[in-house]
Amino acid sequence: MTSAVPAISTDYAQRRRKLMELMGENSIAILPAAEPAMRNGGTEYAYRQNSDLLYLTGFLEPHSVLVLMPGREHGEMVLFCQDRDPSMELWTGYRAGPEGACKTYGADDAFPIDDVDDILPGLLEGRAKVFYAMGCNQNFDLQLMEWIKQIRSKARSGIYPPHEFVTVDHVLHELRLLKSKEEQSTMKQAGKISAQAHVRAMQICKPGMMEYELEAELLHEFVRNGARAPAYSSIVGGGANGCILHYIENNAELLNGDLVLIDAGCELDGYAADITRTFPINGRFSEAQAALYEIVLDAQQAAFDVIVPGSHWNQPHEATVRVITEGLLKLGLLEGDLEQLIEQEGYRDFYMHKAGHWLGMDVHDVGDYKIGGEWRVLEPGMVLTVEPGIYVSPHNTDVDEKWRGIGIRIEDDVIVTRTGCDVMSDGVPKTIQQIEQLMAG
Ligand code: GLY
Ligand code: MN
Ligand code: MN
Image 1 (tube, rainbow, N blue to C red):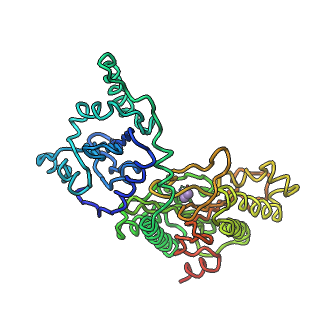
Image 2: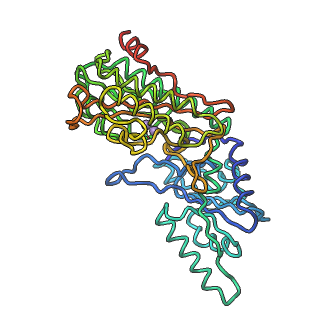
Image 3: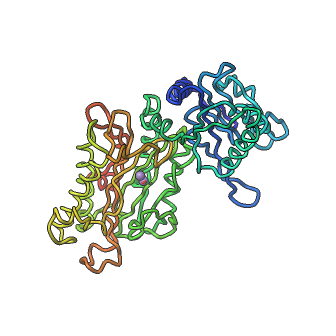
C-alpha cells in the first residue's frame, strides 16, 4: 500500500457526475477495490487499484468500496475504507480513513470497511437499479448476493431488493474510452518515458548479453522517471523467441545476427504505455530481416493513414492485413491470389493477431469494439495501439530457411484527433536507417 496521497484532480468529481447522470434516479453503483494478491507466504504483490475505482476517485487503498447514489439527499458518494490504525499503519503505511475519504477524496459520507455489512444493505433498499460489474470479483459477488438475500427476507415488511441489475461497464467504460486532456497528457508522458526506455535498450544491446539485461535497462528507465511499475510484464525475445507473442521468460542469450523484439511500456499514474520495437542485436539488419521489417513498417503506416474520425475500428487492422499479405506474396512466403489470401485469412500463419486494442488505465483498455454488431466508429480522444507483426515460425518448412525464426512487431500508441491521429510513442526510432544509426552511435 502506498502512503502517498495522489494529486486529486478535479476530473474525478466530474467523472462521477457524468456517470450518475447516465445511471439516472433511484439507482446505485457499487464499485469494490481490487483485492490484494498474495505472491507467496507472507508477501503480497504490489497493490494495484481497480481501474474503475481509480478513475472515479484516485483512491489507492485496498479494502474499500465506492458507492454512488444519484440524487440521494444525504450525499451521493459514500466511500467505505480502512479505518485509521496507528499500529497497522506502522507496518503498511498511512491510511486516509473515513475522515480523509471525505476531506481529500470528496466523499459525502465515509465509513470503516468493517461496517459495510451493516450499512450497505440499507443503501440498497428502495433503489430500483444496481450498477455493478458482476463476475469480476467473486468474493464481492457473493457478498452482494448476501445483502440482496437479507433484503429479500424483509418482503413482508414491504421492503424489496432492487429489481434491475446492470453491468456498470456500458456506462462507465464508454466514459473511460474517451480520454480527457489531462489523461492525454499523462499518457503522452507515459509514452515518452517508455520510448526513452526502448532507446536505452537499443543503445546498450550487444551480442552475448542476456535478454534480462535489456529488461533491466527498461525497468531502470521507467522507475527513475517515477513510473514505478511496467504496465505489463516486459517481453524481451531474441531470435525465434520473438515469434512467441507473450514471451516473458527473458532468460536467453542474445545472439549475433538475430533480431530482438522488445514489447514494454510503463504505467504512469495509472495509465499504460505499450510499445514494441524490433532491432538487430549487432546493430545491422540482414537482408532477409530488413525485407520483412519494411513490410511491417509499411503496414503500420497504412494503419495510421486510416485512423481518422469516422473510420471504423477494424479499418486499421484491414489496412495492415493488406500490406502484410501483399509483402509476403512478393517475397514468396505466400503463394496465390492476393484477394483470395486476404478473404481466406491465408496470412494467419505469419500474422495471427489483431493490429491493436484500446489503451488507457488498462493495457487492453475498456470500451466496446462493436456497437449493435458493427465495428465502432473512431472519435477524437480515443487511444489505441497499432501493432502489426510478422512471425515466421522456426519450424515452418514451407518457407526458405533464411526466413525461419524471424519475429517482428512494431507497436505505437496513438490518439485519435479531429483530423487524424497523433503518435504518442514516437520518441524511439523505427526506420532501419534511424535504428542502425542510433545503435552505431
Ligand atoms: N503488450 C501487450 C500487447 O501488446 O497487447
Ligand atoms: Mn505490446
Ligand atoms: Mn499492445
